[in-house]
Length: 236
Image 1 (tube, rainbow, N blue to C red):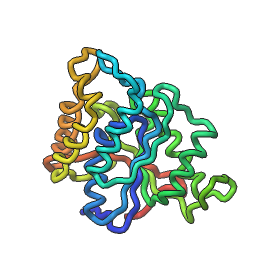
Image 2: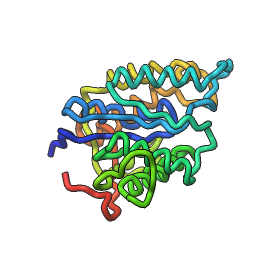
Image 3: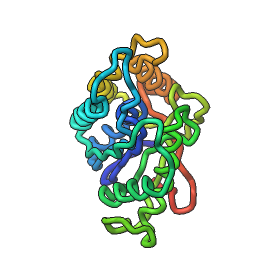
Image 4: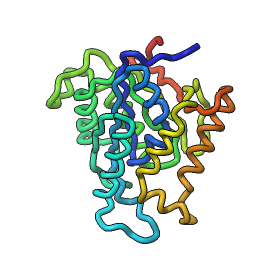
């Protein structure tokens, strides 16, 4: 079976500026190569990810880094500008993200697993799910008009694959070099590789891509699970 993204509009909703690179950039790149429109919504500004030698105006630095990565991918970028560690599934952020959905008008949303390790990831997961429903509801008022139907929703793999049972895999064998280049844009975080309290991101990303690829019989893959709630599941 080969999944073709064709004329889809694919939006990923992530918590932090480098999360898309770790979990789904290969799938986004493959979707774009298939002809899909792609976008990344980053809810937090990354101000909590300080290296051992602190960086002034880190949120602004990380905004430039994610801009550079999104340009490499050819993706639209939406930013929530919420401080790290404060993200919560509340009405203001639901409306903010609902408006992002209504502006980009996705047919497919990729979001953090509800069981991922980071509290911001779990909050982003809840928000992505809520907005996938409210974006098509005329009762939820934002600046843009409602979608005609809710987009499909896929949960992304967890960090280091812990506790995640893949429903399917997307072959990204031809796109791992792009994932590496995108991750390299996040210099403020790559500088933390020697920090004992922080994981070396490049090693972690490549290990996960190749491990999921081995499970799926390809060189590299990203793992997902479809969200099968009423009106959020699709036939492909």
